[in-house]
Image (cartoon, rainbow, N blue to C red; front, side):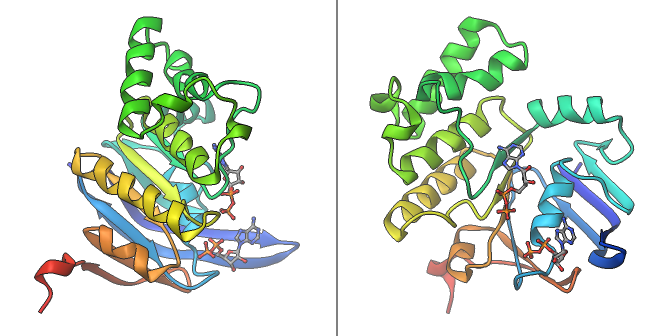
Length: 233
Ligand code: ADP
Ligand code: ADP
C-alpha cells in the first residue's frame, strides 16, 4: 500500500475575492521507502501540495491518504495527532524552541506523543549520533550554525519514526557547504528506509531522489524516475 496517495487534489485560494487555483487535479502515489522530489517554478503549487500532504491545510476538493487513512475528511484534532506521530516536517526555517537545549528539542516530539521518557531518551541519543550532533546536545539552538540548526530540525522531525518526512526547501536558508551536509544526511536517512517527499526549486538537489514530480501551474507535468548519476550514459 502506498504511504501517500492523492486523488484529483484541488486547492483554490480565495485571494481577496479572486480565486487562485494552486493545485488542479493532482493524482500521485508515493511508495514506502521512496525519495520523491517535487520540483517546478515558483508559484506552481509545490508548497501548497506539501502542506496538504502534511495535513497542515485543507483541500478544496479531492482526497489525501496517508498509510491507508483518509486525511482530508478527518477532524482537525485527529489530523493533529497524525501530524505529531506519522509525519515529520522540515522547513526552510528551523523553528527550534529557543529556550530549550538541542537535546530537549529533539526529545520533545516523543514525549508529546506519549512515548516513555526512557524510550524518548534513547531515540534522542540515537538521532543526535546519526546526525552528528552529540557534542551539541546541551547547547542552545542560537549557539549553532544554520546547518547545525537544520540538522536538529531533521532529528526532531524523525523522532517519532514518521511514515513520511516532508521537507519544504530544507536547504533554502543555508550556504552551499551546509546545504551539502544536510543533503548528505537526507540521503543517509533515505538509505535507512525512510520515505521522503522533498520540495525544492533547485535542480541539483534532485539527484539524490528516486523520482521527480514536476509541477507546472498546479498540475503534474512530469513524473519520472531519476537515474543515479553513476549509471547515466
Ligand atoms: P510554490 O511553492 O511552487 O512557489 P505555492 O504553492 O506557494 O507555489 O503557490 C501556488 C499558487 O497559490 C501561487 O499562485 C500563489 O500565489 C498562490 N498562493 C499560495 N498560498 C496562498 C495563500 N495563502 N493565499 C492566496 N494565494 C496563495
Ligand atoms: P515557505 O513555505 O514559504 O517556505 P515556511 O516554511 O516558513 O514558508 O512555512 C510555511 C507554513 O508552514 C507556515 O504557514 C507555517 O505555519 C507552517 N510551518 C512552518 N514551520 C512549521 C513547523 N515546524 N511545524 C508546523 N508547521 C509549520
